[in-house]
Picture 1 (cartoon, rainbow, N blue to C red):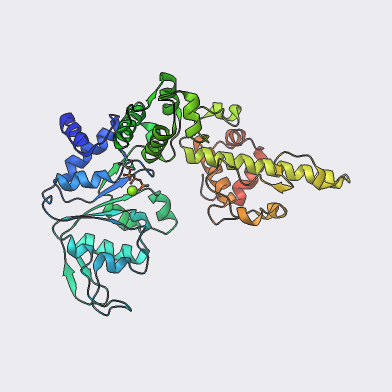
Picture 2: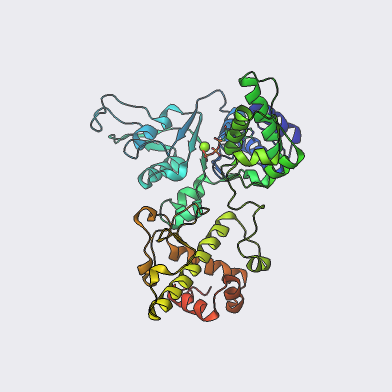
Length: 413
Ligand SMILES: Nc1ncnc2c1ncn2[C@@H]1O[C@H](COP(=O)(O)OP(=O)(O)OP(=O)(O)O)[C@@H](O)[C@H]1O
Ligand SMILES: [Mg+2]
């Protein structure tokens, strides 16, 4: 890595931070800038992906040519092809004049396709063609046109999952991902979070003519570093601006900080839900931890049902059972406030525990969550079912039944 080049670029673009992951991302951007290879930038929302294509373009041989940034997620499906590839006059209702489209306009330059994971499948096919042959056709035309555009794309969606779900073409993914650049999440950046706080505090003080920027006590710095920052740098920027503007105290303690950062579902601050289970392994990422929470909730509900049934059988009034996950008579167990994705379907066995209407959302099914948890547990325990069952806190028999139910025995997991 050419450290001084990386530092120069960071200064030039106001990029703050010195962690390895960030420096590596900038370094790769510089190395590939002079080539025409496609680059795919990945990373969670708010990590700073949008600066990388700019660095690539400005350091490339195309720097004097056009640079366009197109947010694929914000263009309606009906018009995206015409925006990207152009259209002929009268190609569709409302097409009064012709349109060149970004691929024509950016000829010789760079096109940044932001949120590329949101592209409709039909557009993906057109994009693949232009990437492979440099050829494209305007909407409503049959003429093949040529263009020479360097593509840099970015996404915060899990592309492997999008491919599995049939939402993204695998061939296009490989074509875009010739050079992958991964932007690290803020929680992976160690001390950078404090540097970024200082930068945003100074920027805000300057912007609003405040005499002194806010400062963090050493304890508050630690708290900042331990927080999980689900919204990454964007969230930190907002929080710092809020504190700078709203806090009468200029020296920020952990207590003051706590008023501005929401409770952390996966902070290192919180005690794991079940220590015994977490001793045996660590969860690789937040998503898995959230799956784990859902998995545990499902088991809790099953237990709860058994309790209700046994009391009903014994002649008790089920509604009067003093069980905790019931809020005003409404079962809340399926919806955990710390879990970002509400759960949609319930299995046959759970039908009598249907969720209230407002919680039913088509996002992820409880069965999928359970299946994933089982696959992961089996993988982690190298297929040893007894250990996997222990880790999942279910009986071996239940695990056997579920493996069969989900057809996992056929996959030789
Ligand atoms: N290292 C950094 N130094 C200074 N500012 C940063 C840094 N990283 C990100 N930012 C700022 O954080 C904000 C979010 O960055 P950006 O818009 O690039 O995120 P993103 O990765 O594109 O997120 P999304 O996937 O949600 O679009 C911007 O205001 C950006 O300037
Ligand atoms: Mg973005």
